[in-house]
Image (cartoon, rainbow, N blue to C red; front, side, top):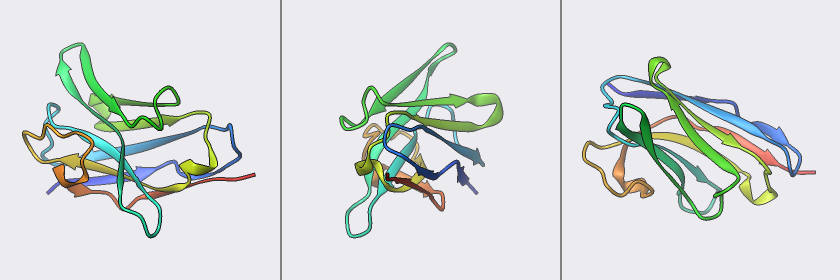
Length: 128
């Protein structure tokens, strides 16, 4: 049984920062993607960032164009935790943010359909 638990959401002003955390438990290999997605009511879920182990000393990370240069995904393998550091937040970043674990062998890291396990979500509101 795979479980994901997000935390760290909240309300910030434009230009502010938040760090989301996702604790992953269960049978998720480090070579499988763990990703962050977000969803605004009435819209489809969109990929924000994804990460997987590439080797002993490096990871593969992917980002949506809208967050490149502002968001950073990272992981702590020992703590089974994936982080999303969000800087220079904008009102359009407001959404429910979900952590997800991909199905084994996934190559489409930013496609929600590649992910079989989801957390409950944590809300992020960016507003002045």
